[in-house]
Length: 206
Image (tube, rainbow, N blue to C red; front, side, top):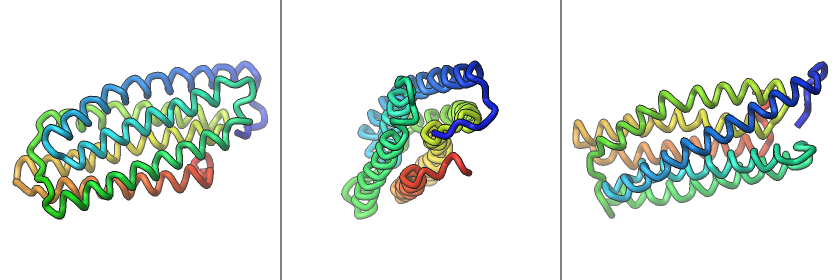
């Protein structure tokens, strides 16, 4: 974490407190999101919903890593460890979802329509961008790469929500069962990209 020159100690304290509150809000929402997505994904055999739920679990882990970092007197000392944890979380998610999607495309199981999943995707499309952009602004002003990385992971949920929504709608309205695992593969690809950025420590510069 490199604190920008000119920022006062008082402003730094305000931004640090803001990041902590946003992290807490992100964790709370994603716990609820994960429970709904995983339960519904298993019920309707949806690789996309399961992948979405697992992404929520990863987001909780990522937010917890940032919370752990900012609980230290000197958060900069924990920055690299937090970034590595975030990156590995993404990679693990991508591997699992990719395998699950291939199995679904191979016909091992057929996803069923899910109105609950569609509603969850719409809710996330509304909520997650607000949390992400607010945290990113605070993280950039504070000069925290891990806070920005976590905000990008939250923003990723918006993209995943759109991908999930498209896959569920195509399956539910048109009966295109292959759209669900394809949406899940899209989720895996986005997770790999974000994992690489977190590993390199790039997010704060973008």
